[in-house]
Length: 277
Image (cartoon, rainbow, N blue to C red; front, side, top):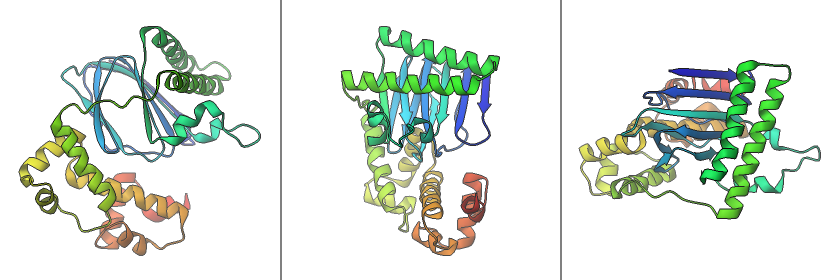
């Protein structure tokens, strides 16, 4: 259908607009920027951290850095969406402070904004202007697109302040049950976990758990566990001087060799490359 992609090459600002008949994210997704996901048309199933939600046309989801997420098709796979990734450094004023209106973004790992038809006109106008700036590439377009993104974030935070924070319902009781499993993995990833042990803990068959875990989250059990472990390892690589073999044990990998292989599979780079970068 149609696609527009811009990356400033610094991993701090990215714009991706897509119209598609169908799309499943092929890989897991977490990054060091805030992500703004605006669904311009259609319907998407969205897994974020520990829950699955269905978002509809006009909804905005803002995801904090390093929060694992993935989108998949619903029964209506055709959709149009805009994604903007922006680093927190663009929010900081000259005195080092953040605007008070943006505090909801720093207090939560993700926020969900349900727009009224009136509010959506404002969000639509900003989204389309961001797309136009990146497409036309007139002088100063990147700075202008960043300013428009900040305006969009402020408008979303104003809406949350006025209407309150909404938490979407689980699509079904099965999804709610899988959220319990995901929260357990998020808290016990450093332990020796297997599908069999999890199935026993939650009183279901391994086959049922495997099948519905994939259906509810978009991840296989092993894929999700590996991504959580790698995400935690990345934090330790950046925030400590701990050696790779110690980090691999800390996050639950049986050997440093396996850790290195999985880390590269998830991130595209070896652990030491990531630390140096």
